[in-house]
Length: 194
Image (cartoon, rainbow, N blue to C red; front, side, top):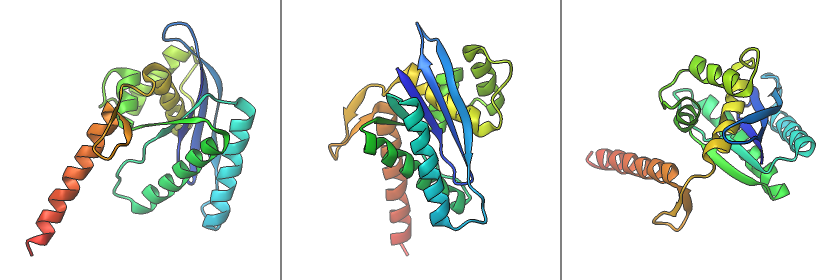
């Protein structure tokens, strides 16, 4: 099994390719950070990112593309750029019939370190140990992409169940979706009172 991990970002997008080994071992195949200049027009940045992602997929032929699920952040422009690049990664996978998996940051931390509250240094230390690296991949986006790929290798899609709308989700995704729905309902109730 070969997994391409993608840590989406419009300025910096980490990509890491791992091959599954025996047991819980993994072999580093490729890691790098794709970049686009902040001063370029959005359409050109997205096009450049799509071109780069296609090249990585063509060169390494992954069985699965694992992408960090966009997570709520205070910086709206960062979230939008991250979501746009995540969408491009999903599109590139769909163009080639490659399965896509999404993992939240806490799922990645829990899979790699055993704790969903681990910090970046703990995640990087585990990557060094598991992959037999001389030091953590730099910049952090590269390490994050490898952690996402390792999560997919170790946890796979997880147990899949169907939610109320008929969508197949892992148990963690179903819990996440229900939490989002509950929060949305709470906001709607609080705004409808006025």
